Length: 199
Image (cartoon, rainbow, N blue to C red; front, side):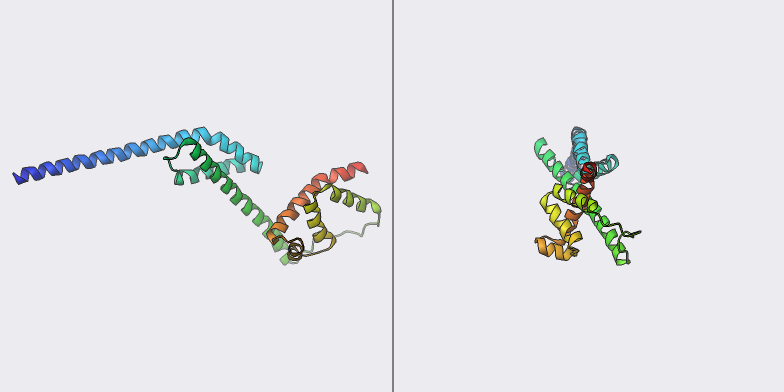
């Protein structure tokens, strides 16, 4: 009698284990299906968001892929759809921030490597004749820049201060000075047509 009872208990246990295994497969399939739906609903939103931040189709596609790879690793399907979408955009923001951090680090490091190797900037062919025209053009461009860009460019190029000294003078971090200098030079290049068009 105890053998019969024992066999029944084992078969009941085996059926329960098979049932649990079947539920796990079903849950996994449901999770895959939920993520596929989530992916399809959010792919174009995330891609457009990323593209608006990086402005390059190939980079936006790569970053969008990275965002969804990160999402599949950490998704919590117990959240509601709006909460999951907010979380996905947070993943997108941090991924984009990481992208720009690496992008600027590479640019800054390569400039620093050039300077360490002894590069002193572009070579001057001949000293230009002293004229008020270049000075006027520089002044027009500087006036057109926002004040924080103007201050950084004045410190770096007119006063010949180092990045460290500029940071101290403007109460900024060195990294912030580098970023502001990059943005100021980029904006000045865009504004150059104002100065050249007015002459």
